[in-house]
Image (cartoon, rainbow, N blue to C red):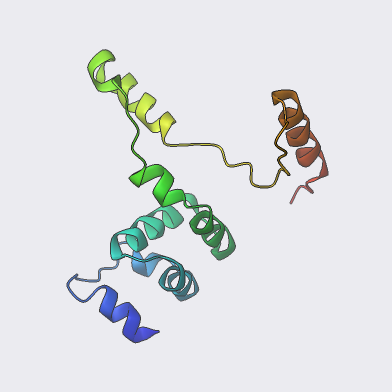
Length: 128
């Protein structure tokens, strides 16, 4: 595992900024589940910013958060139509898709069915 870590970051100076702020357990999950150093750094930053546990990190990787937020081609004209603060906010809003992987979807589901499933799920989720 250490060899893989050193090989992944061989051309980079490893600094205290991000990789040292997450546990080795987080880094092991990243080594096992992500393909590139850039993705590794992105998930490490997101982990630090959001305080993700290792399990949350793994869930975000498995739900392809990096691909949805960084790599997805989102076509907008916000930069041209809105002033700077609003255009950046609009772009950031587009980067946060909802993932309802805990709802058992059916082919014939209607919006009210999804709403009911969300309500049911939130009522059945214990508060920690």
